[in-house]
Image 1 (cartoon, rainbow, N blue to C red):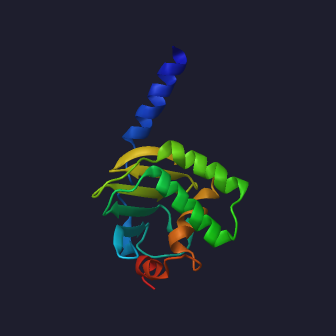
Image 2: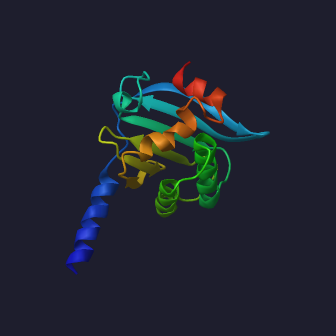
Length: 165
């Protein structure tokens, strides 16, 4: 019974947390694949400028979906992007994908998924402004956000829009 109460208190404290409101919009753009518009992306940083992950945190990447996408497709696309960026998938990437499988959900048109990189390196995920959970490995945030922000991204046009380059 005590474990149940502790778990309930923990999850209640998570749901009470909100996306940081003290961030400023840096850039925004549209991501499309072939002729499908998939999502609108917005990047917010502490001061509205890009100075790297730690100097810009808290950092918020907000994606507003324009079509239905399954959680499984999200995870597969994430792993494909990690492979694109690194040349191969590591054991760590596969462990992170397992964590994302427990956090993420399917989306439909109009849903928002937000990734928040906190100054301590924790990444929180929100679905329509409600906290889904967090990944506490400090290496995860840069690896995940590099999908959009690395100079090796497969979406260089969106990167330029997000970073205002």
